[in-house]
Image (cartoon, rainbow, N blue to C red; front, side, top):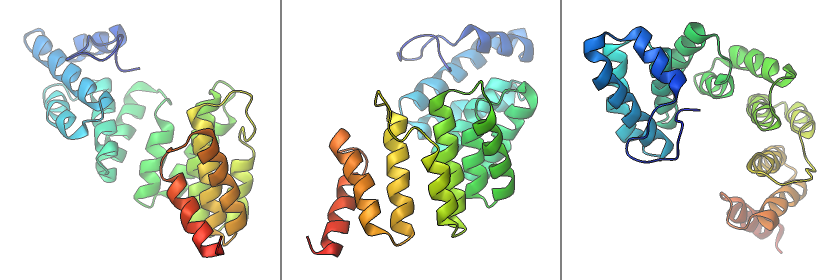
Length: 225
């Protein structure tokens, strides 16, 4: 959690983050660094990573030992698609904090830069951790399956996703992402009928979610119906 309250401009930072800044920043720099990190966090949570980058970089320049400053900078780089930088910053956060809460994002960035072995090991640890929530475990399975599919191991990818909550009692965002991932794997594996079934499931549950409707149209045109 980056902030203790709903988004305003800028929001107060979580007490844990404030404590980190107090231990890392000089008293003279503390107020300005706190404001910069609050601006970065607000912009990031409001889906404005371009605006989050300058204050996040300012925090790193002034307090490089702030683990949460490195965390937010890593997340900003990830959202911008600057994956090598995201890997470097999120690994620094992991090393400095010992916290595994960003491991799925870190693994996805590692996957993007070709470090698939590191990513797979990290994701397998998340999946096996009994303390991890269903949503995070599902996200880990999605990224792990993407690595397997990228290597042409479609049966493994399908099995990885199939161990997730495919038939949930209560629908949440990560279930839609799981169904979509299953559709994507089936399409890449050359199984359009199976792919269509998963995209239909997504579209029926949440019309307009992502590009599931567009994928359905394309698959139906390919089938001729």
